[in-house]
Image: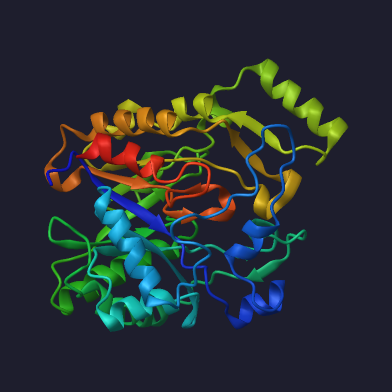
Length: 362
């Protein structure tokens, strides 16, 4: 199948229990725990969200991982970009699903890694408090070397997604520390020493208080733009901002912040930036953080497959003049269910989001 773009879907491996989650949230916690407790908070609020074809899966089950890959491939997704957690000093979390993908050779489906170099805090992941659960550290060169050799088998795997012959590796927060520049330099040298022609580093850009140029100066090869909050930060009128502030003062957390998907999605892409050869835009099927954060969450209301399809078409048009290797679009995300941010089928829409994607890709 000839594809109009290289679509890579961000993939969350949080769907299996680990001791740390048992400690923080209770025995047996997975992302499904948040999904299952979600409730509608206002008229027309689409909650709870219930998975359809794949069910409430456990990512320790190889058949589930294979079914996900087969579904993604059928609808035009090139591969999964697995969120990868290395907190420093060898500490990893929720690594088992990806480790089993490497060890088993299944599914036979392309993949890459995105280093989620972020401190975990309770609120972001479903707790009422904002305490630090586990801190992201940057211990120095020896740790960066250990990190490299930990993932080297993946980087050398025939399934690993490459750009210009180099394995693609995303850094979630390229501006988090000056040590990220050291990290990049160390990895580039180690890649050559270990038979690779380099690493294609992609800096993730979702903090719109920064600029693309700030991320490019870290030495990454490309920038992935994700502008979920672009409208809220840069395009709301003074009147809308004032109304939002008044509402917060008087209602506090009594109501989730709800805003139409059709409005927000108009600002997910910025043609002047996303047409650049080494800028990789993101497409976003939806958002609803209330499964994790309750009334403090933000909801994109009335999201529909046809609105998403318009968004996909615009993204594909922006990359069509680029070199074939660089026609990359990231989906945020394949399976972030507790953020209402997923492509997998649910009981309301079934396969319609995937079908919308396929129509514009193939």
